[in-house]
Image (cartoon, rainbow, N blue to C red; front, side, top):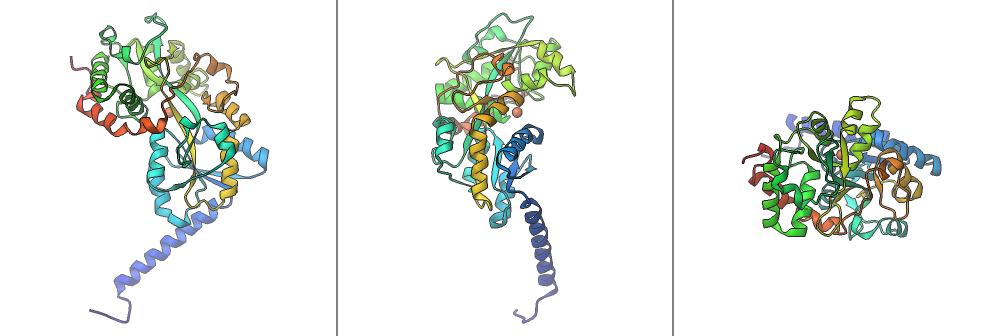
Length: 353
Ligand SMILES: [Fe+2]
């Protein structure tokens, strides 16, 4: 059937489209008020001091929209009208997913190349690491005397009933297992994850900080966690009980048998349709540079990626970090396999033998 006049259904559909367009242009209008518009999955309180310092340095204003989940989907849905200039997120998995989703674009830039070592950026320049965070062992001050532990040794039966971790499916643990596969192969990784599972004191639950809490409560002796959470617990004025959790643990810098520690990164990428491309690149350069790298270490307790930047006293106290030199993009290739292994061995169901 054909008709020259729009059917009521079509009219309704057109109205809906008009409403959607109005809504998204309002969004564009609001967000484009700033000189650089940031879509981020990082806690706003963590990045605001850096954005303020950038504005002070350059006079350019910023607006950050916090998007916990579905960041890539949102930019994809906004398409050519997306107000996003840059994406700031954590973990190479998320950065790589942004590249695969086609929501970012390459940046060929000498400053970024000079500041960020090659193993911490995409080989096609579609994302750049900004900070490193060690995936380390939290060890009970009271009950653990070891000062050096390898990742491999965490599966040793001597830790039976003594290990706590968050879900094996959390991106931080998936990345660590992916690194294990990259070092030792899939079979060895399966054996290792099975060993970790059987050393668990309880079913994986909570976040990294909850593992320190469990150590403080005597539920376990060692745990896996990221370095910066230790700084965040030590200085937590809002929830001072976290200071007690931090007091119960030492950070032990675990290594693979190459002597190097697994790190994950926080990073940044230029959005595919960045309306303020030039300003966006200025922000990327700024965040990779001396001043911002120092702020990351002082306020967020993260490790600068730019070589030669002094780290804060709190971060120094975690011990010397020698980051694994395997390119993160290499490790990311094994993420799917790592996640499958976690399910196969029933890691999140807790100890089975
Ligand atoms: Fe985190």
